[in-house]
Each structure stands twice: as C-alpha cells, then as structure tokens.
Image 1 (tube, rainbow, N blue to C red):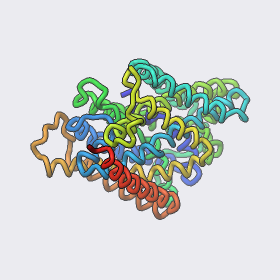
Image 2: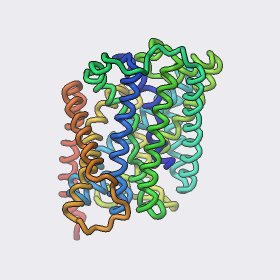
Image 3: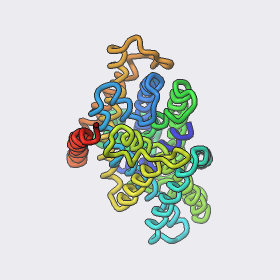
Amino acid sequence: MALVIGNMVGVGVFTSLGWQLSGIDSGFAILLLWVLGGIYALCGALCYGELVAALPRCGGEYHLLSKVYHPAVGFLSGWISITVGFAAPVAFSALLFGRYFAEALGMGESSVLFSVLILISVSAFHMWRLPVGGGFQLLFTALKFLLVLVLAVTGFFHVGGGTVSFTPSAADWAVITGAPFAISLFYVNYSFAGWNAAAYVAGEVRDPARSVPRALLLGTFSVLLLYLIVNAGFLASTPASKMAGKEEVGLIVAQHLFGERGGTLVGILIAFGLISAISAMTWAGPRVSQMLGQDYPPLQILARTNRHRIPVFAIILQTLLALGLLWAKPMAIILYLEFVLNLSLAAAVFGVVVLRHRNPDLHRPFRCPLYPLPPFLFIIMAFYLECRLLMEHPIESLCGLATIASGAIIYRWLRQKEKQFSP
C-alpha cells in the first residue's frame, strides 16, 4: 500500500493545479476533474486486482500482457516501461525535489545538483536488502502523506483567501465540455499514475493473491480522498492568480499560509516528501527490466542480482536514464507518457474480459466487483483520453507511437538473437 501511495502522490499533486487554473476558473470543475481521475484509477485497480491475483509475478503489464495476449505485446509494454515509463516520472520528481529544496535554501542555481544527488542516493538504498528498501519506502510515504494532509487541512482554516467558487453553475457545463478541461484531465490522470504499482512486485510479497488487490484498492482510494482534500484546501485558501501556470503550487500555498519563513520550511518538507515517489518508482521499475532479462537471453545482464536478490543492473540502467532526462521539458514528457501508458493500461484492463471469456475456469482468488462495469468505464475513458491527445498534442502522441514501433523492431531483433543462444 505504501508503494502504491508513494508512486501516486508525487509531482502531480504539487503541480497539476497550477496548470489547471491556466484554463479553468471553476472550483467545481477542478474538483470534478479529480473525481473523474479517481474513478478511472479505481476501475483500473479493481481489474488489476483480479489479473494479478490470478497471474502473480513481478513485471506489471509486461508479465500480464505476455500471459493474456502474446509475448510480443508484453514486450512492447515492457519496452515502454524500460525506456521512459519509470525513468521519466523519476526524473520529473527528482527535478521538482531539486527546485523545492534549492529555492527553500536560496540556492536556485543548484537545483539540478540536488536532483542528481537524490537520484543516486535513493538508488543506493534500493540496492541493499529488500527490507531496507521497503522500510525506506514506508517511512517516507507516511511522512509525505501526513505532510500533504496537514497542508491541506491548514488551508481550510484559512478559507477566504481563495478566489474560485465550488458551487456548480450553468457556465460550468461549457467549461467541462471544453478543451482546457480535457487537457487538464491529462495532468490529473498523470497525478493518479502509479495506482498499479503493487503489480510490479507481486512476486516479492507474501500471499500476493490477497495482499496485492488490497494494496491496489486501499492505496488508490486513500489517494483519491487525499487529492480532493488537498485541492479543495489549496483553492479555498490561496488566490488562483498566484497559482495559475506555476509548477511549484505546494510552495506557493505554503508561503501564502505560513509566510516566507514558514513556507520555506514547508518547502523543504515537501521536497523530502517527493523522495517516496522517487523511491517507489526506483523499487518497481527495475523489476520490469529484471523480468525482461530473465525471459530474453540478450538482455540477461538486467536480470543479474546481488546476494540479496536485488536487480542492481536494472536499477543502475533506470537511474542513468532518469539522469539523462533531467534536462527534458516536463509538460512534453507528461503528455508523451500519457499516450503510451494509457494504451498499455487499457490493454491490461481489457485482459480481464479476455481471460473471463477464454479461461472461465481459471482460479481467481479475487474477482473484479460489478464486472463488467469497471473495465468498460476504464476503456471508454482511456479511448477518450487517447483521442483528445491525438487531437490536441499530435507530436507527443506520434512520438509515443514511434516508441512502440521501435520496441517492435527490438523485439524482432531479440527473437533472432535468441536463436543464437539456443542449442
């Protein structure tokens, strides 16, 4: 559950609101965005709970899609995870950590240095024994959850500073059906990304058929409630003009609530809160690379572990990719990721339908409640998001398709190389 929460509560909760306020001035519409994003994530979590309980193994979508459809489909998903699926969010979280920490200390020019140091430090922790990495994750997730909750609740004690209304009006319908609402939904969806995190380590936990579905559902629902409280508190306490278009929304709200000095202290705490997001993705992501290394001999170096069974080479690869992405544009990365990740997630969710039809007698320790409603709602929303992304941001979407095409080429090459490894 700490892994799920740590993966989800990261950059998005501290940045998305600023981007939303650039095109939306309705508090009701903004909170509706977060409700829709939460429903989307919960539907996915219910479906993943059934899949992982029936097919427990590390690797997330790579493992699930390989089993449900074909190894080629699974490889494409794994290729996305290896190249940018985890490295890009890790880089974005580290980048924001550096900005918050450097600004709080008055050392803005050193933000990238702090980003590099935190990436290397977290990776080093996860190269130790699993209980060390797990304990590290649990500690920083708890601290971050409490910090964000306290910041949100404090905002409610300063109600009146905000300039948006939460009361629905006739004008809200035009807002909800407009392009800014759809674009903002991309950022909200990115904030909920990570609800599937427990699926990546299913092979390393006791009784995954029971513990993974619980972690997925409880973690996702907890984050939905937290996001609603946080954004309502921010909007109620801080003028929208101060936050609109800004990435460091958490720091702006903290400075508004506690003054310059108090805001600086909270900014440092927020920076440390981001460590759990970096940690969660550093834990989960390399397990995909490890599974690929086990299944494809040319990539076997990624499957190598130390004496504590930690995939050190996979962790090093992801860290190096994240370091390289520190200089990329955050918004372009998010839109690009949204396109490719939504395809992968939708394929996995539809796998519940495929397995129910193809293997009705398969042992399912957990069955998706209200089936087929959750997979149906998830796939409809995923289709809507993909269409809007293609229309509003064709370049980022086409880059996503190019990544998938490159994965298909790599898969063909690996299959040819496998013949050389065969006796």
